Structures are given as C-alpha cells and as structure tokens.
Length: 565
Ligand SMILES: *[C@@H]1O[C@H](CO)[C@@H](O)[C@H](O)[C@H]1NC(C)=O
Ligand SMILES: *[C@@H]1O[C@H](CO)[C@@H](O)[C@H](O)[C@H]1NC(C)=O
Image (cartoon, rainbow, N blue to C red):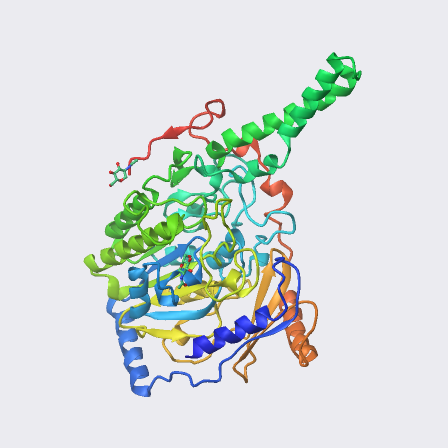
C-alpha cells in the first residue's frame, strides 16, 4: 500500500543516524516519500455527479452548509482506528472517515497549542498574528496575561457570523483573554466571532486538577529544600556544641531566601488552580477552579443544546476538546475501560462525544447539509511518561517524536472531513494540507469574501476533497518553531517527491538545488511578513493582578461553583 511504502521510507530516512530530538535544533534534508504509485482517479461521471449533488445542496437551502469543526487537544495521529490503531476503540471517528475523506498528510501550522490554534482560526502562519514567541514560552499559561489573538485578526467564525451563521465555541480557547482590565475581554472568543462560549480560556494543566502535580511548581521541586534543611540543622547543632561558630549575619539572609522561595512555591501550588483554571459561560466564570468531573459530558450537552437551538438556521460549532491533554481525566463510565490506561479512556470518551454530536445532527435532520471536520492541534505529547511508567501522552504511529518538535510526529495530525452527498466517502488523500486550510474553506462555503488586506496561507480544500484537482496547492509549507523558521516542506510541482529540510547539515547530493528553491520561497514568504506586536512577550504573558478573572475576590482565592448545566 502506498501509505505503507511512504511511511517506511520516512522511518528509514528519519532514523538513519539522525537522532536528535532537540526541538529547535538540527539537521538536513529528508526525502519524505516518493509517491509515484498511481493516484486514485475519479471518473468524469463521478466528478460530474458530485458537482451536481454539491450544487444542489448549496442551492437547496440558498446558503452554505453548517460546520461542525472538532479539535482534540494533543491527540496523536496513531491513536485512531482509521489511522491504523488496532487497540484503542474509536468507532465513531472511524465512521466519520468511512463516510468522508481522510487526509494522511495533514499538517498543523505549529507544534504547540497556542500558535497552532491561532493559525487554525485565522488561516495564517502564527508569526503573522504575533502568536509565535521570541521568548521562553510558546503558549499562555496565565489567565491574567495581556497577550492574545489581536482584534486585527479575522477568524473564520467572524466571517461565518457575518454571513448569518449562529456560532459557538465549546471547550478550549487558549488565545488570550483580556488586554487592560480583568473584564475587557479583548481576546475573548465572543470578540472573535463566537456568539456563544462555554469552556476554558487558557488550557488544561496538571495544576488544574488536584493530585496531578503541577507545571509551575515543578520548578520549585528542583530546589533541594530537604538537603538545605539538614545542612542548616547540622550547622546549628555543631554551633551549639561549640565545634564551629556561625554568626546570624551569615545565616539570616540564607534563611530568608529559602523561606521566600518556599512561600512562593506554596502560593503557586495552592493558588494557581484558582487563578488559571476556570470554566466560563460567555464572559461569566461559572466554576473556579473547574472540575474535570463529567466535564466532557457537560461540554457535549452544551454542544447538543447549541445544535438544537440553531438547527433551523446555518450554524458553525467549534468543539474544542479539553481532553486528551494532561492532566488526563475521564468520566466514571469511561474510567478503566480502555486497554491504554487513563489516556485510552480519555480518547474513548472523546470518541463517544463525537458520536453524540453526529447522532444529534442525524436527529435534527441536518447531517446532509453539515461539513464535519476533525483534527488535533498538533502531535501527541511523545514521551510524557510518569515516574511509575504510566504513559500520559498519545501515539504518533510511525512518525518520529511529537508535540513541540517539527519532526513529523509533532505536526502530522488527523484530518477527517465528512459532508455526505458532496464529498466522496472512504477516500484517503495523501497531498500536503494544513490546518490553516479550514479558514478559506469555511469562508468560501459560507459565501463570505476573504479579507484582501492580508496574506492568507491556507488554501480552499474543496477542490481537492471533491477530486476536482489531484494536487494540493501547497507547494511549500513552512515549519516554525515559535518565531523561528525550523524546516521547510517542498512538494515540487512537477514531481511526487516530498522534501523536508531542517536548516543545517547537508547530507544529500541535491542539497544545494533543494535549499536554493526553498530559500527563494523563504525570501518570498518573509517579504510578506509585517511587524506585529509580540503577544507572547514577557510583558504580555506575565501575571497582571488587575487582569485576574475572579468570581469571588482575590482574598477568597476566586472560588465558586455555579455551573448549572
Ligand atoms: C457525573 O455524571 C454521572 C452520570 O450522569 C452522575 O451520576 C454523577 O453524579 C455526575 N457527577 C457530578 C459531580 O456531577
Ligand atoms: C494505539 O494507541 C495507544 C495509545 O496511544 C498506543 O499505546 C498503541 O501503541 C497504539 N496501537 C497501535 C497498534 O498503533
């Protein structure tokens, strides 16, 4: 099989003495695959048939289709049955692939949540919106930070809304919240085209769930408090015995320093969840910190209600799962059910939820007029394993490495699209596509005109999906590591080879020709970049007390629970 051949050559090239998982570092030109085998060709009759049905379903309603866009957090391409997993049960997602088109070279625009989601929402490389970091952190982890998706950006939700669509985001946003005050909501989903929002503004972190350890606090765990304590006690003891003599002048600053660190660590440990892990309904905080208990079920219920409320008009639902990011969770009915510990349980619950959404579309009679898309924001968190050996991250199949790298495992994501009667069923497409393609695809189908005052990097997927063209328009794809160009993928127009160059050590004879072509593309691409404020600068990711969303008061640690869904 073609995919098989492709994959094994990838494995061979990527592993041939090139092991270096350091994410921004390294290496050379890789021939990703030689896909010379015959492509599936649609006959003219099929093509015309599809065009006819497509035209019918567009004109029947006098409007574009509805959209249900589903993004799973940190899901690996190798976790799904339809991408070859045999032990995790994902029947509902597999059915979507069976009834639609499966993309096998679907590429996330970045290997981290915030930039990838910015690219998805806007159809543009994250460096264009200032969501590609030049500093230490590539994502937001503090809710009271001022960076986020700028109001200058146009999202697909905004375009759909302008065309009369009811729009909703259920789940994770991760593209900022406030700019100047804790309630200006300048980066909030409501300001970016979503009429309705139920979910979390930042991300699910271990800190958000008791007993799962913490991200920030981990830094403090490296300080050897115990050894420092023992050393100090020994010194005091020796001093008391008169063996050594220490003065308070020497000891006091040390004690104060250690005490300050301990206090800081403790406050992060206890306060972080209240400050950063909250559930919102539109602009109201309804649970702080949010509980993972039945969370996917609650989100599913919210989504179903949105579909029911809006089935009579065009709608766009972006369902953005909080799973399967750590800290992992699953509702009681899914816990302990899969063969892959809590991670597998969480994936199976995601699949259940997808099934519920599809069932709702059927019940409401809108399946035929709804384009469904399912993806992950980037590759699975490869190598996220607990000290006791439990695997927290997913599986990227044969692809090397994972999240936070531009190896294929970091950016090659599932991409499934279903629109019964318009798109072919059970079709697999190997062409390079991007999660940025959803923006122009939605814009075009919704009848919106694309913003013409800016570069859009995504390409309308419909011609490829419907078999009207055989080749993707993406001759080049740029793989950024935050704000730095790490690699380029090139699919020459006159060949089926796919090259991927990581900028550095050359190791193939055509190196100069390939790098030359890519360099020209980089120059053209770089010329289209304009200076934008860095939303992830230190000043923009730091905690600003006056931005702290809080449903009680700071002194009460921002606790509440009035979620009535
Ligand atoms: C979670 O859902 C189950 C089943 O619907 C229910 O029995 C349980 O009480 C719910 N838990 C919470 C905390 O709401
Ligand atoms: C299926 O997914 C699980 C969980 O990520 C993984 O451990 C397992 O290796 C995968 N199995 C196959 C056959 O790909």
